[in-house]
Length: 95
Image (cartoon, rainbow, N blue to C red; front, side, top):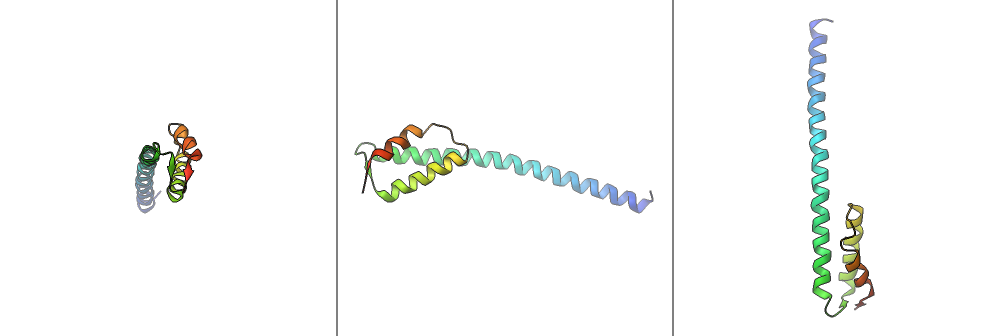
């Protein structure tokens, strides 16, 4: 292999190593971002539940928004932490 080919191979190796580091960092970021999203969604759902649990009724637009948050919570890997609250809200009066 001549000097130019060796230099190109070395360059490719360096670039590929750089891409691998970037991909690893992006994978870590995705995991961290998913965890943050789950925590924020859980907080918002629980906050909505706490705001309306005494009267057991809520505006329909807030109910629909909360169900959308819950769907996203589950898609992001959220556990059953808020299932009971959501199931209870489903039974409440909407206006």
